Amino acid sequence: MYSEKVLQHFKYPQNQGVIKDADAIGQIGNPVCGDVMKIYLKIEKDVIKDIKFETLGCAAAIAVSSALTEMAKGKTLTLAMKITKDEIVEDLGGLPTQKIHCSMLGVEALKDAIKNYKKL
Image 1 (cartoon, helix red, strand yellow):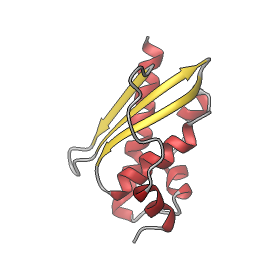
Image 2 (image 1 turned 30 degrees about the vertical axis):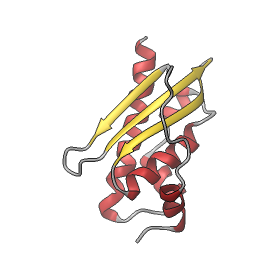
Image 3 (image 1 turned 135 degrees about the vertical axis):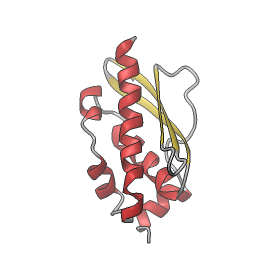
């Protein structure tokens, strides 16, 4: 089952919502499970000053999004790009094997947002 930390992030997600004047947005979906993650970034001097997410998905997908935003906030874009799915899983105290793909969705959504910002 889920760790206590996964359940906390699911029940009380951090940074959930929209940044209306976001500097960048990234979105990734998984057609197999139906999860969709959207990440909004507010960036100042290459540092993530604010980050929000909208996730349509299971408890693991929401917990991953919440934990990821906590990990990325305050980091430079370079450091945020280095966040791995394994770090998210470890931070959450583990995920069931069939839910590990949720951590990859989070990483990919963040990287998509950063790449979109760098294209501007």
